Length: 238
Image 1 (cartoon, rainbow, N blue to C red):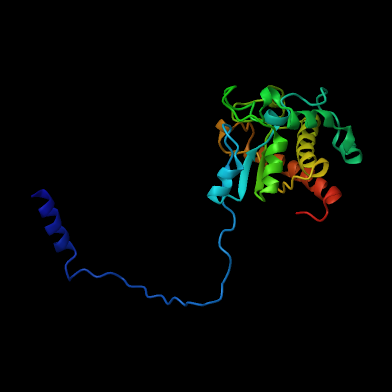
Image 2: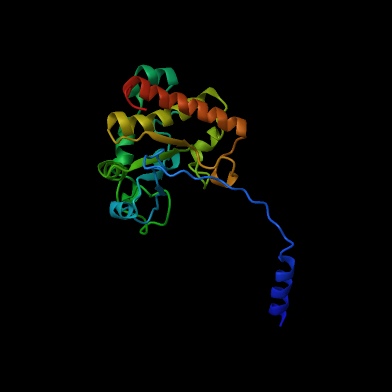
């Protein structure tokens, strides 16, 4: 009965006395394409499994990957905070401890590139080389997020540059960004050309310890490191 009353009330409210504005638009149909719709559809990696067939089956052509210090530089790779200096790296990139980078990317702790995220024994077994090489062969573009500190506020040694303040802090941040981009694209050719600086820096739960202004400076310095790699070693790449 109540439902019938509502229906009757609705009919009364929307009787012939009610009018609505009408906006008439003309749609033109053409056999010629006017543009290109979204060309990329992506996924964010999970730590339980990495199977390229899953991505291909879904039509995924980009894969977002969490990089950063907690994953690939859990300890200061050279053991001397604030060194090497940015100008030294620009002059001689081999001053960086590439043995560390080759090892962490090839033989990660616990046999998994996801050793830093998840419970031992549950994460995918494999290294970063496999991930990036497989994505390259499948023509799926990686989007790599570079962070100093992750959502668990790790690694502990990087908290002193969260945010960077001193010259030593900036040296460490610039070196890490440079090393990530250089290792993936110069020492190796994994075709990683899309970069994100940190993750949700407006959400403190994601690990960023600075202000908005601090974040802008973090991005500027990261951009300088990325630009240096491309202009110096990959001038034909964007």
